[in-house]
Length: 209
Image 1 (cartoon, rainbow, N blue to C red):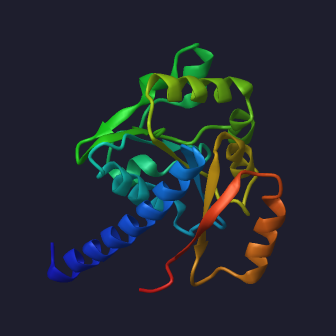
Image 2 (cartoon, one colour):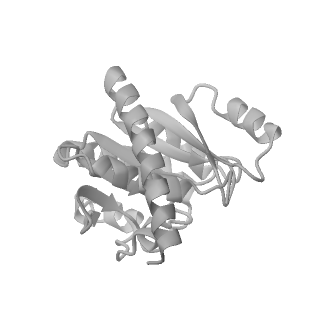
């Protein structure tokens, strides 16, 4: 790795360590354990934030973390972590099997479990609103207790799959594109998020090169 790349990687790690500390403090103080990372628009970098936040959380020696790719219509967690993707969630539910069979470990982060479908699933929004999925997620949390479950979701302003996933979370972390995002995007997000779990904050991604 070139010196400039190593420096950039250290800066990213430091920023996510700071974000981890803030998120952990707030979530613990409220007794919450499930955080949805929600990009406002396509390309905002929600999966990048979800993956790096999960890795930062898992670097804590005694913090068990689960990262779940709930962007079922366009999953990207497996690719970003360079791990094999798992079987479709819909097929697993139809078979009456638990989601724990889809979990994988990441070599660089022993405290991190990942549920990352290999390919997109049809009717993602409908699947996310299915009571069978909600119950399966609850059983997963019970069978593999994690202090933090991080959900990577679809873009909020692009499709209804994101809204369908949000009730599964205790709190939300929004990700905005720092170069292309607009005040109108935030205003529309506030409208859509009325009655949804609390927003912990907004990550301004891509705000600098």
